[in-house]
Length: 212
Image (cartoon, rainbow, N blue to C red; front, side, top):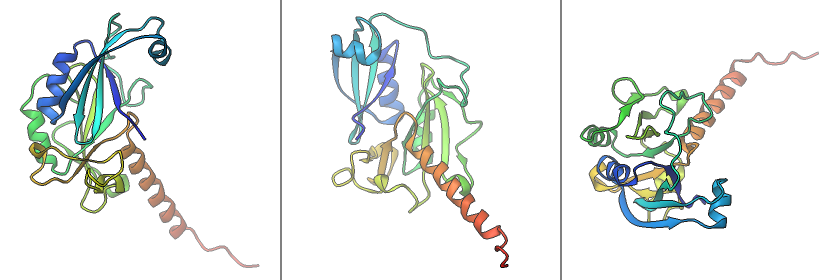
């Protein structure tokens, strides 16, 4: 089970306001992180940080602001760079979610134009990638009806840990929404469907073996 997603930030208050206004998160607490275990986990001797906890439905995200500030997120990182990792916010109404995002300031698009409908070989999803005010890559993701992975078809009260109900401001009805992991479960699912479809196509198109 994934307990939370963490993003490193230089300005936790500003970034928390963005996630609240643009994406419907709620701030649930602020804590101080430090000590030997935290330093070992971060790989930084003597690391100390402020942690702002946010929640979307039943899932949590943490914004970490280290006492000793580091470099900014690489502005020109591409999707094939190792540093480029993102998570997706699964929405039940892409147009409402996209409209809410557009009403906010500070973010930058990655996707050209509006949300894009991907081909069936990529899961048939509608996606829109963008960067938050500090450059972290994010994605709004909408699955066609009946095609979302099972965790995102459940209500928060009865579903797995990675399922949650979408905020009312993003959907007219309490349908599933979710945060995926930093390597994007949804992307893995889309790739798996694509590979499976390609395999089935290959087996169908291959000539039958000859008998001798």
